[in-house]
Image (tube, rainbow, N blue to C red; front, side, top):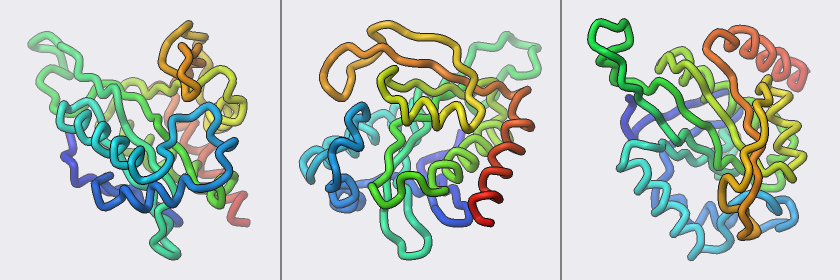
Length: 210
């Protein structure tokens, strides 16, 4: 699997490894209308941003996550964050074609949020495209999944637009942003579905640029 130096770039954004240098920019990016993040765990202020980065890096050290800062290429400003996490390596038996792989077999994409000015722009579509392309075409994962608070209608609509298949509701699945036990809506994209989903994402980006 890639190390902590992985950088993914598209037309308008760059995903670079999240680090302590991003603490203050993260705090600035989240200093906007708090109602935008009602259902998402977004760090408020420098202290929370520092803890956010520290926790993300601890997961990276454990090999279960790769966190990114999302940078707008036009001005170099940090506009949000995202990550691969719940990175899974399955125990394939000796003799199986996937035995001994160093790359993941499945993963989740999440902890995605954007500053107010980047919401409803092409940034999210571009981020998902380059992350999914890396997961399916470099790592050759079998599945990428996504979870969101069932109350987060904007996030659910975004996942459906990129071609995520709704799998169901996981009850009391994770701690919610409002410190309750949230029910999560689960979506996924399979390796076999990726070519069609990729075409859809490229069409969306072409339409937004027209």
